[in-house]
Length: 331
Image 1 (cartoon, one colour):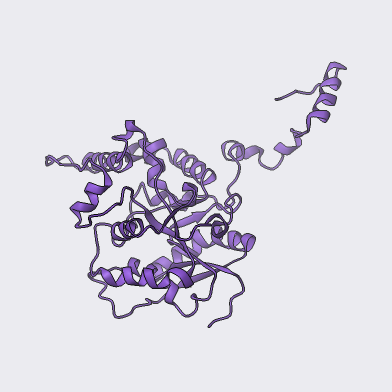
Image 2: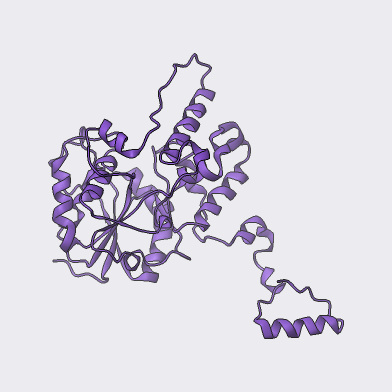
């Protein structure tokens, strides 16, 4: 067994030069300070664990289910699988291994959707589908086909994919936290059970299996916050590519605001998608505070303007103001 410097490890796959380059340029600068702060190793796997797999029918994404069997990883107390398109807000994100204290596998389910997004159960998915289809249709003059959009609960969604059981949510499997001694074999069994990709590779069947087996331990949603969901809920105007490309500074503000307000910001989706993937390169890994993003010209000296004081000192400054000192008193 390989010797470990830490009790926990962040693990991801980087298969191909393009993925390695993107990770090293944009992602690792956010993972390294997080790992140093909380005491993690970072394991980047550049070769398949199961090289016999037919990647034409079963993508590399499935092999996250095998990391607990990897001889260099099986000895960790906890493994934290993190997709390689997730940026970590290292300034504020707590230790995810410590945040997971259940007997199962730590996962994130989407928060309840507002009915205004298209329905209480399927809101994010329905709203995303509509915005994405309108984005595509705006780029093509048509004519366009009519379309049927599934607008039902997740049990119906799973049944349409041949999966019938008590699963009422869609787990985004871009983040998984587990004890390899406890769960490596179970995850490997799930890997062997399925022989082909689903609509989202492994996510639909793995989400289903974790729920029907009772292995889904809920994590704080900030540990896996899909940027696409943020856009749907807060910035739907970014699906209008004319507006998006006309206001690059606005896109920068939006994506960095999302990064600041989450812990693991997930740029899930196809590699060249202009809305769900493209803004990843705009994230400032230093994660400046909101006032420094909005007024960067003051970043180096705004602290000279403000003194943050306790109640006793605040009362003293108030007295100084009454005595004639030119000082603003801010609650």
